[in-house]
Image 1 (cartoon, rainbow, N blue to C red):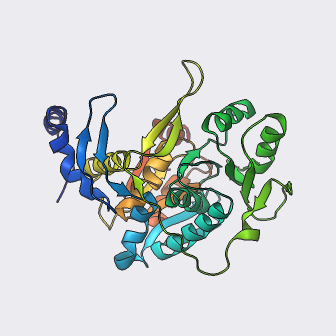
Image 2: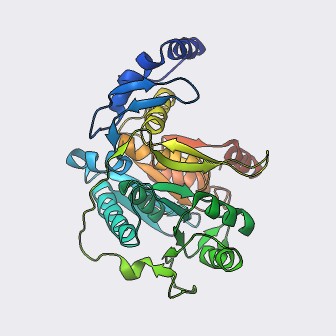
Amino acid sequence: MSWKIYSLDQIKALAKFSMENPEAFWRDKANYVSWFRQPEKILEGEPPYEKWFVGGTLNISYNAIDRHLPDKKDKVAFYWTNERLDSFKSISFQDLYQEVNKAAYVLSELGVKKGDTVSMLMPNIPEAVYFSLATHRLGAILIIHYVGLSEETVAYRFNDCGSKVLIVASKTFRNGNEIRIKDFVDKVLESHTTPIQKVLTVPRGYSDFNVNGKRDVVYDDVKPKGKVYVKPVEVEANEPATVYYTSGTTGRPKGLYHSNGGYVIALNWAFKAIFNPTENDVWWTVSELGWPVWPMANLYTIPVMGIPGVLFEGYVGYKRDLFSRVIERYNVSLVWSSTTTLYTLKSLGELPV
């Protein structure tokens, strides 16, 4: 069935019905996810303190991976490439399942459990998806911090969210420049008091970063060699899944919690209405980690729907034809981004991009 909305009149009618009959509107949307326990109520309470899908238990990692394995284990979950187009990966749902379980095992060995917050500073690489979904597999709360923030801002957010475990990549590349993420994190932790106790580093290429023996863990050193299985932890629909920070234009940035149930269901409905994706589509979200756009698509919608996504590391304006070459290589049919991407492409001139 097509959920795509084609007219302003449809939008107005849906908005009117959803406001007048919110419980009825969202009742059938509950089947967008797989539940361990079905919700007892669709809606409880009044704004701004209402709860959705009350009593239902689920797991985001299970919805993004496990439930697709019977039919899609060999199908592509994600493609990855970078701005230089000199490296490529195709990750099947079976690959995703194995990698997320390994990542979840390591996080559990570091003490991560349900309700804990886990922080991340990562580029747009497969490991960012692995560790994000691994965090959710354990029932923990994910906080992704933007790599381009100042030391003071990152330290404030570490303290505000209370994470004891931080996941980083050693470095990334953007617009031809090397960005040394681990070195930046070392400076933050050396110059500020934070709750971070363990830093789990994903090495990129040559391991040219410092390792603090008591604090630092190198993922390649502890990653399980064989298959492991970590059972997805059941969480109630209204328990927090992730935290996004506001820009701080009205004072200190504020952490906004988003739930495991209603948030994921709402995103999936919204993108069904906008894109109406099918299994034949390939979806590229042009976004940095740390902005809500990235997890909204690459964690809570694309894999939950079971369609292929594209992970792109770097700057889309690095080369004139980079944007079109990525689309052509992966037969991208859906692109979601901000207006910044359009301005970037416009700045490259009138020749095809």
